[in-house]
Length: 473
Ligand SMILES: Cc1ncc(COP(=O)(O)O)c(C=O)c1O
Image 1 (spheres, rainbow, N blue to C red):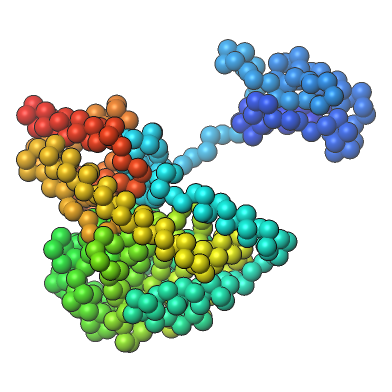
Image 2 (image 1 turned 45 degrees about the horizontal axis):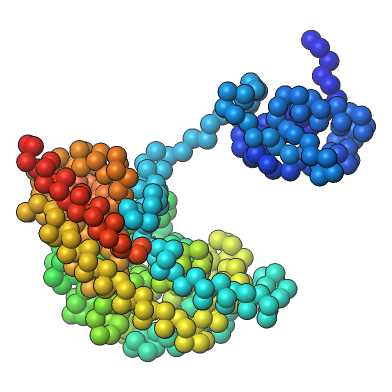
């Protein structure tokens, strides 16, 4: 066997990196000096190595600037042997991830449950972020307290007090978003194998958290008129030891339903009778279309059995990784779980949200955002109710930004989804909202992107197609 060239110690690594995409076209390669000292090679060996890469067509040299990865046309890709096997990913997880986060264009993506680029207060956020960086400087590079900034916790508690909800800021924990808050809450009150009740339909991300913690799930149907199937829940609690109930009483995702206050109180009574903890999701409460923010279950809780969580992903921007958990009597366990999930939430996000809450800009943004969402809800609802075949149902949300729709049994759904796929119209299919495949004819329409006349035309076209599919049978 031929003796390997000395330079192969580094050229082989560069070739691999180009092949698997760690290095991409126009990326700068390490300098001759860096390679020399890293691999203890002579100058000549390093230069020979680079020449070899250039000859192979992988790299180009730019006099005075160094070596760069070349743009390679498909047919010229050299044949390099690799030892890397493809990454194996869970098929249904990947499918659900794509269905909830893929984006085609602003006009046809009705699947992404976060404020669209045009509705995010970009200028306000970016300007405030710059102010924070200027004012706080290098202190932002330190660890912050693992339960979060004290002033931020106090401001959140003050905000919630306006809605009749008294939270002790010392029992609040700042988290990296709502999903982390939910994970901490569940890890504090349950152990693998416990039974947890959720609303049905339930978003895929929450189901995924439950499954990753090895919890058993009972799905309790929501109710269009008053919010929740209390009788069914009562029956389940009599026969099983349900440890916790996860519930979004205000503008539940995906249905947009607002639970009646009497139902909130009934849930509290049932939970009290069965030594169960309620984990209340308050993410959408600020996005009400009515006169005022609805009450949360926590505000009726006199026994301290409600944990509560929220985040700013749905009201400001999903890239701001900041949420919170009110852990109450489970604080000490929650604090430890929070710690092991990461020493502290990014200081920049904590300072940013603190600054936004200290002024009136967040409130002002919410006022315009709510108005826009309500307007869009009406437009979307008008068009889908008018365009889809008789027997379809689209629920009018009372806040938030999702519409839950159901098509008549006769619509062949595989064909419907194939049509949407072909035309790149993205909704979230009903089957992602349950472990038990309960919603084959349902789908969620998100209206948190700016709804244009083109989006309206696409919804209309989809409705017409559903009609045709129904008639074909
Ligand atoms: C019910 C629910 N929980 C959690 C999340 C995720 O929120 P965050 O980005 O704050 O983790 C979402 C949105 O995707 C949601 O709808």
